[in-house]
Length: 168
Image 1: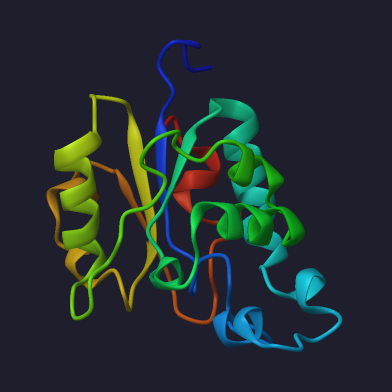
Image 2: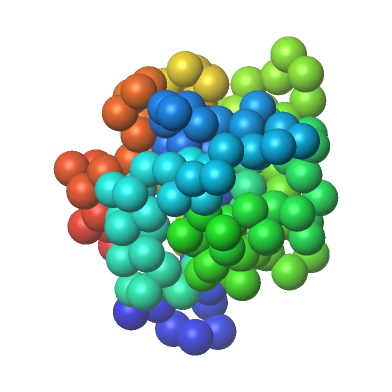
């Protein structure tokens, strides 16, 4: 268990990590008339279970690194997370810097590096992304040090990832 005064960080992407875009994704979240079963089917149940276990064990602060933050403010993101089965993420987003905005044409590694260089205070941290948008993370020093979990496109985060048994 992490000491209470040191809260680890989890930098979390959505697409192909917690949202497989089957059957729903960001387009349906933004729709005027979203499907009635959107909240039950938006996020991948195995990913929710892994993140719940990580939260219970480490009580981390969460930083969203998803491209969805282009259309979400903090309150809307928190609402989406609560409705989608991730209330613990919504309640524990980093107090001041909840998002690592990914600029157009920029990869996740650059957005994460910028966030960490500006706000990281030495906390243990992990970056959870997918192999497609997280291309810059695949060869990063973070990956070599065990601070990156990359999910396969269409598979997402699940109990087979090292994160499920991580020491953060």
